[in-house]
Structure formats: C-alpha cells, structure tokens
Length: 451
Image 1 (cartoon, helix red, strand yellow):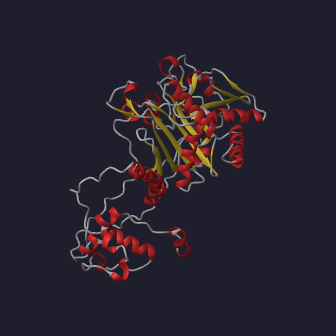
Image 2: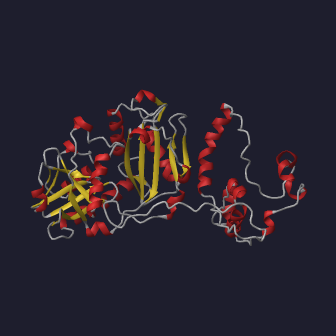
Image 3: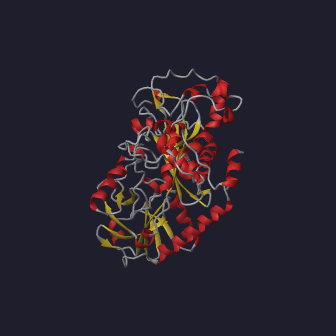
C-alpha cells in the first residue's frame, strides 16, 4: 500500500539500508537527497538530543528511547550480544516476509562516495568500498554478450538444503558454504535456460534432463519438477525480467559435514541456486561465424563419466576451452574415443554436405535440447537430417558448418583448424535455420508459461 501511494507521486520509491545509514551516513543521505530531489545539508548528520513530540508519535517512549539519547549516526556495535533465537511462529513469519525484504534490499540506493580527506566536520562514517566489477562481457564466441549494469543488483534464487527455505538474495550476498558439495567436489547437475517474452524456453525439457542426471548420480533434488520451475519463475519475476535473460540453474548434493566424496556425509537436501542475468546474445557472431580448432581432449565413454550428465564436473570441457583460448579461436571441436567428431566444448556441432544436415550420434555427447529442436525444425523445413559418425575430413570439405546451444541458438562456423568452411561466410542452410529457430521461439512464448 505504501509503495502504491508513493508511486502516485514519484516514478520510483527510494530505499535505503539501515546499515548503510549507520556505516556511511553522509553518502547514504546524499544519495537519498538526490533521489528525492532535495538539497543535502551537513546539519542532517547531527541533531540535538531529546524527544520530538511534533513528529515522534504515541509509541515514541517505547520505540525511540535510544534515538532520543543520540546526537548523530553511529556505526553498529561490534560487541552487541547475539539476539535470542526466534520462536517457530516468528521464524515462519520471517521466512514469509524475506522475499519482500530481499526485493527491497536489491533496489536500495548506493551510497555516494565521500572523500574522507575533507576536514570540514561534515563527513561522518567511511567511504563505501568501491563496487566490484560484475561482468566484462564478450564480443565474440558462442556465448558473446554485452555487459548489463542491471546484473549488479539482481536477486539470486537459493534453496538452502539444510533449512529447506527458498529465498531471493541480492547478488552481492548470494553465497554457499565452502563445505557445499558443489564447491568441494563439483558434485551436482545444472541447466542453462533462456527467458523469451516472459516464458522459459523448453523449461520442461531442461528440468527433465536435470532430473535424469540427478537420478543417475543418486541425488534426490528434494522438490518436484513443477516446484523447481516455480522457483525459476519466482526468481525472474522478482527481478522484473522479461526478455534477453539467461538462467543458470544449479543443483548440488548439498552441505557436507566434512570435505569427503561419500554422499552419506551430506547434511540435508541439495542446494539449489537460480542465477538469472540480463544477457542477450550478441548479433555479430550470428552472421560472422565461429572459428574452431580440434582439441586433443576427447569426449569420454559412458563407463568413465557419462557425457549425458550435465554435471558440475566439467574439467574435460574446460581443458578443451582453455586450449581454444590459447589458440585464439572461439571453441574446441572434440572427438570421440574412436576419432570421430563428437561435439564442441560448450555447444553441439553440425555439418552440411550436399544439402544433408549431419550431426554426431548421441553416444558421447550431452543430449542437447537445442540440438534436438534444431533437427526437428530442419526436418520440418524438408531438410534431410541425419545422426552419423563422420571424421574431420568431412568437416573440412563441408559446404557449411554450424553449432547450436541454449544461449545463442544457431551460429555459423567459418573456419575449422585453419581451413575455410565453404565460402567462409554464413550459408543459406544456416540462415534458414536461424530464421526458423527465431519463429519457433516466438511460437513457444505465445503458448505461455503453462505449456
């Protein structure tokens, strides 16, 4: 109600954090004055002790006792004894209110920097720590995007496996324990999902794959697929996200009682983290294409670590990615144990030969959702689409090559191992698939969230 009334008079409601006001009163008040368009005055930082009957209200004797004794903002006491534990009723009430608190906190004004070298008597408190750079972005590659300043204040959805509480936490405060299974061992599964026109693209398929991986590693996610999807929508809605958003859904086995691989040392349910970011795929790579190299790192057999698991343990793909970085190309092309082309380190790979769209068999790859959708779209366009073993010789002489992935959809490949592919430019098959994939995404969004 208060927010609605305020919005009648102002476009946005300024929010300040009490800890900012006490730690850096001048910077916080300057930011507040700027937001409500009034002049900051140094006398705002000091006042005479005693009550203010004209504004205190009837509850002042109970609420404002320490305030009446004060004459200035003071930093919080470091020796303050801990508060007694809350009753079950109050704990439930706090949990219910927490999403609203986190939402307001994420929109809090950033205190202005104040020069502590000034000696005019007006500065009280300390200069806030400079903000940490959130993202650098990327101008090329399969995951190229431009940095977005809104990501500095996004809310991260987190399910604490010990308490079972799902909360929306400001990015700067979103943390997991150093004893979490994901940090200790890379023990968990994850998914990447796009938000397009307010709808999570192919979210049912992504969540199904995550649950399949969790079942394979004997991990009970501790929530239904529908409940997990709701957590994702709660996160993007709390961030007021609608378009150009990428979500990383991460589920680890949970908190460890001690750093050891045995799952029996896990305390509680799995940890769930939903990191949603404003991250629109760059347009340049969709036209200009990718440069790939073949890495010495192979895709493993299912009896080593099943490549169908989208697990947190991605070191083989990371090693291939590092090799691509060192070579100055966009991605590494990875072979299977028999020397046939399998996939790239983070996207799936296709070639076009005499109008036939070819991709590798599923034996040594992650069962890609975008891959499968693009194959379905290609068949709908009348294209002959096959899953076959093929070698690098077929790649080098292909008419076109392209990669697919959740983040950017369909991207052309112009070079592999220094060989120009086709004309070296985006070909007609890739162009048709890109256009059809965009139409497909729009159609999925039109069907709405329930589909």
